[in-house]
Structure formats: structure tokens, C-alpha cells
Image 1 (spheres, rainbow, N blue to C red):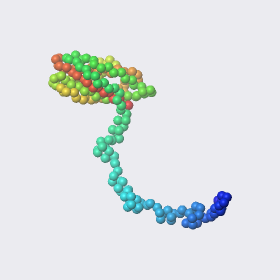
Image 2: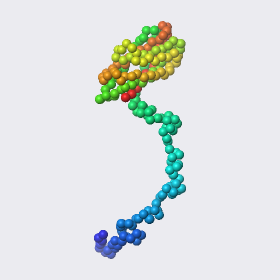
Image 3: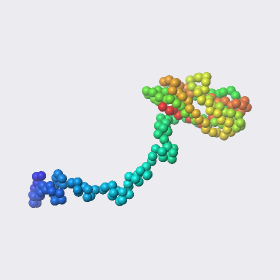
Image 4: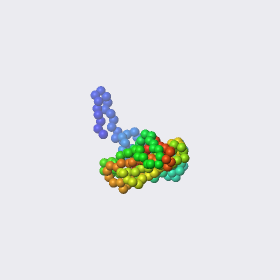
Length: 203
């Protein structure tokens, strides 16, 4: 290595030493296996000084069984949740009295694998009640003017309760669709109610 001379100062020494431990420039073999071994942080030191050993890590690990039972989170549940998202929400209270089905809400949706969502399933959650707690409230869901309900949720509760179900929409096709919801009571003198409605899309 060439020396650099600064005026007024003696030139630096250029030892070019390469022997282990002589304070000279590092050369091949200066830091050798023996030196690394003497100063190394090995498994024994980690286990005693830092108190982190493989056995302790193994004992503290979160196994698949722990996730599935303790936290109630399994791989299949996570996959399902990742693919699901709230598509529609409506909290307007609607009602109808009597045994004639009445259309109460219309919701539009688009199935579009290219530009939007390739929806396969709809999850429906609705809050329903009956005016007297005896007559049955039925909340039926149709699509695109169909004459047969895709899903019907029922309640005989005098206070609002959540009811849920799923609809297979995989065969509806790409494009715009209309979801129609209809209420009816099974007693001509009683009233059926729906408050909150949530629709989740699952790809």
C-alpha cells in the first residue's frame, strides 16, 4: 500500500504485515477459524447467556393446531375472509302488513370478472322482526325479476334479530343484476319488519 506524505509530518509507516495478531494490514488468514471459534457466539452461549434455545422456541411456537383451536383462525377461514367484502348495506326500516308479499328494497350489482368482481356467492344478513312475536315474518330475496326466491329468511321475534344465509350467484352471468327484497307476514293483521340489510360478495 503506498504511503501518503503530509508536509511537516513524518511519513506514515507502511508495515504491510499479514501475520495474525501483529497489528498490520489484514491479509489472507489473519482472521482464521481458530480466532472465530474463540470469540464466536455459539449455541451454548446463546442458550445460557441469552436464554434463547431451540427447545424454548419450539415450546413457544404457534402450531397449526393452536391457530385452529385457540384463536379459531384456520387457513380455510382466512382464505374465505380474504375473498369476501361488503357489497351493499342498507339500514332503512321497511315494513308491510298482511299476507301479500310486498317489494321493499331494490339493489343493483355488477358481476364483471375483467373490470370488477367475479362474484360466486352472496352472503345475506338481515335484521327482522314480527309485530306480535307470534306471526312469522318472511324476507325473500329475488334477482332480475325472477319468480322464485333465491333465499328466504324468517323470524317470529318481537324484537329485531339477525338472520343470515347465502345465495349461489355463479350462474348469473357477467353484467348488471337487480336484487329485489320482499316482505310478508303469515298473519293478515300483523306487520313484518326489516331494518338493516347487508350483502357480502364472495369471489
